[in-house]
Length: 115
Image 1 (cartoon, rainbow, N blue to C red):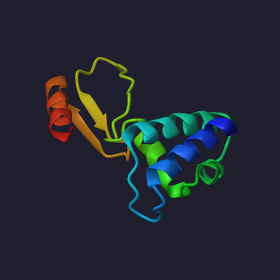
Image 2 (tube, rainbow, N blue to C red; image 1 turned 60 degrees about the vertical axis):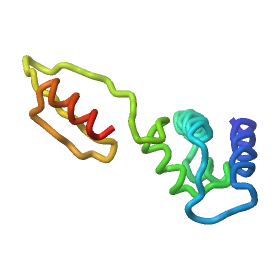
Image 3 (cartoon, rainbow, N blue to C red; image 1 turned 45 degrees about the vertical axis):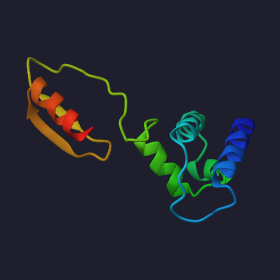
Image 4 (cartoon, one colour; image 1 turned 90 degrees about the vertical axis):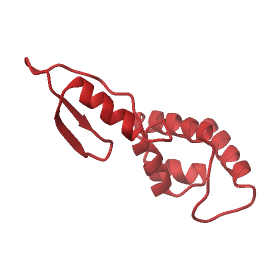
C-alpha cells in the first residue's frame, strides 16, 4: 500500500508542476487512481488523514474525491433493488438529496437532464 501511495504522490507532484495551494486541478485518470487506492486503504482500516499525508494532499481534498467516487463528475455505480410490489423509483444523490415517486421513465429523464 505504501509503495502505491508513494507512486501516486509522485504523480500528483508532477501534475502540480511546482504549484501549490487551493484550486489545483488534477486529471480525471489520476483522481480515479487515487480514489481506488484510498478506497482499498479504507477497507484496510487506514485513516483518510494518514493517506492524504502520504499522498501530499489535504485530507478534505481526499475526502471530497472519495465522496464523489471514482467518476470525477460525481456519479457512482449503484445497486438497484426491488422492495415490495412498487413500480416507483427513488433517486438519491451522493450527498443525500432524494427524489421520490418517479416511474422508471421519469427517473431516466431526470438523470439524463442532470448528467
